[in-house]
Amino acid sequence: MVDPEKHIFPDEDALADFALSVWEAAARASTGTGKFTVALSGGKTPVLLYRKLASRPDLPWRETIVFFADERLVPGDHPWSNFRLARETLLEKISLPPGNVHPAATGKGSPEAAAENYEIILRRHFGETGKTAPVFDLVLLGLGEDGHTASLFPGSRLLQEETRWAAAEVSPAITPPRITLTLPIINRAAGVLFLVSGRNKAEVLKRVVEDRDPALPASLVRPVSGRLIFAVDRYAAQCLRVHDRL
Ligand code: 6PG
Image 1: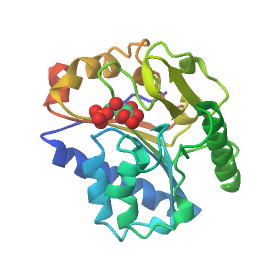
Image 2: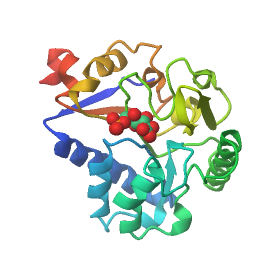
Image 3: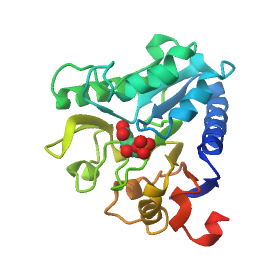
């Protein structure tokens, strides 16, 4: 596993500009292969990136295939829907063929059925790319104050998952149920980009980036051979070693 890269920015705007540059480089690098496959995260932090992406019609959108790192099991127009957020801030503002977007929850059936369905879609997509293993070109992730990422929560049985690529998180503590990509598929990515902002993330970010605390799901994101990038603002970076903050 490669060491995580750390990039610290003065504010959310600079953070989003950096994320945009990572996205653009990954998208352009994939151009020759005909497909740029990305997983979007939910949460508030990527919204500025999505808005910046929406003003870049020059990016190779026809080749861009969009999946979601996780989703709440709600209808696609629900305020809690990650798909809704991405649609309103990015997807409906660019020329992306509708077939290029794969929402994780359709609002029908059980959480387990929704996860199985998402896995079928993932396997079909990666089968068509001709790759023997699923390789996202880029996975965007956020970090929760409890160390969760995507919908992989501390103590969840999903952290032990070895074969499935998508799974349902169903627990009385987490409502509504969620669909999430699992560690085996996230860790096959060519690039994983965490976007973290705010003082409230400072302690947990240190435990993930420096201590690699295995109790925290975000610490278990360790791409086998891809890049692992933490892009954080200076508020979230407050507990990192001083030389990392300079
Ligand atoms: C979600 C994400 C979740 C998120 C983190 C950080 O849909 O909420 O799955 O993992 O990325 O909770 O969220 P913020 O960016 O809002 O801090």
